[in-house]
Image (tube, rainbow, N blue to C red; front, side, top):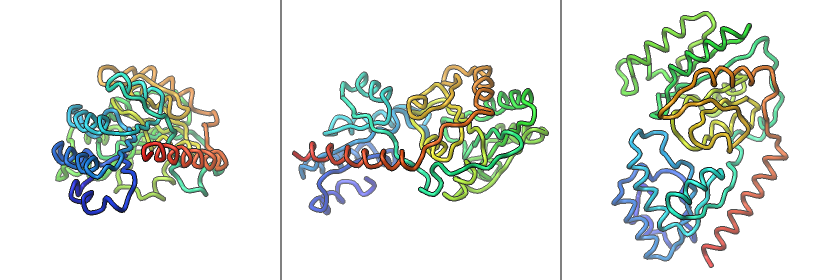
Length: 303
């Protein structure tokens, strides 16, 4: 959508259906409206997959809601990932959404692959570049309390270099100091590094026993899908629809409330038990079913 209406005017004869997943947050409301008008002008149906009912990169809910309103009004068909998200779409816009699962994320060779046995559990939290929805410090402090009570466990905190770089736009001095202070604890391994490439990310996720999502708001998670592929347990917040997306344990974290005791308990229950892990046969079957479902939806909107 970045080129907007002019691209659609030039290329409308090259496609039958316009399917939007992401990227519309990068254009203005006027640009988006013009693009949608161009689709209507050329009688090209719009299919929308709603990954995020609330944008995890924006504290202000209004910009995403405005754009989602335009897209949902014009979409011939709507797809989402969980029944909870579909119910939210119905409640807000009186539109029905087809629920289809997220496909596998990691390469075939790693889906269901055997995991290494380590002497003690590693609990991971990745602060990334402090996405707007993240609240890593209180989550990490609660996890440390749980790790201290679990003999042999270790808390690994990862963060992008730019968060600790005082010259970076992503630097937050209070969070940076808190993370560095946590890193001084004997049971904490603080790792600051550049963005992972894909292979590094898969290796990182496979190195964890439990990955904790420190999100105060959001809807769904590709990170969770990758964990499911490689067999890393996920502890997810109660905001959003993570518990409907893939098997996980949850703790209470929303915009309004954080319950550290529920996090410690979810972490404790995740340690020492086999994590849910996809098999390639399962993911391959799922992918074929997803392709068939999309083909049916595209056929319906074109008829």
